[in-house]
Length: 207
Ligand SMILES: [Fe+2]
Image (cartoon, rainbow, N blue to C red; front, top):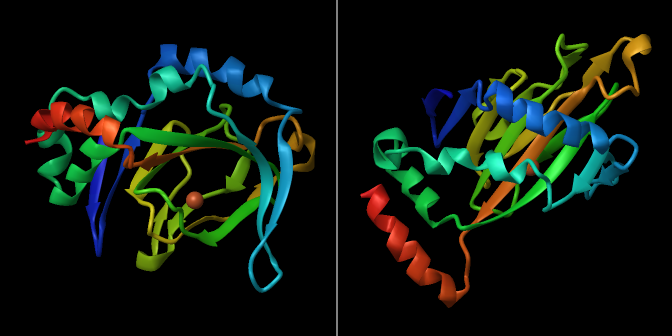
């Protein structure tokens, strides 16, 4: 896991080589098994133009979930995150998450929007060698471009505007699962009082 922290009007970070080879071997068969089960979505924004075009699965039962949240399990979260920016202390309270699997083929994109969670993590994946151009990730409020890279994650506050630019593929590669995969994790702070003792218990790790 190769971290890179960025401190702009807000802080965010990327991790390259997020999954190990073994983890990727677990994840890919599952991702591929979803080909053909995706729902095409062409979301509209308020002005009536298309704001996203791609394929979506809202799924909370991926095998993948077992390995995906490992950024919270690092040995010393204070050293790793809080020392970079005290705002990352919010991470200790993030006990609840939902996930969205997206697949972008030729001409697919996701226009600027914000999420309603506290933090968002986007995992970028593709088959090697990469057969598309574009599909880069942008934090639009601060004009930051995070280039698409296989096995890279971006972790940022969900209030931040973000978008994915258009994926372009040669005609021979289209519609074969060779495009851009992303798995978005929306992390929330639970509102249920029953979870407060768990929060308090794990707070010590983040002092
Ligand atoms: Fe989003």
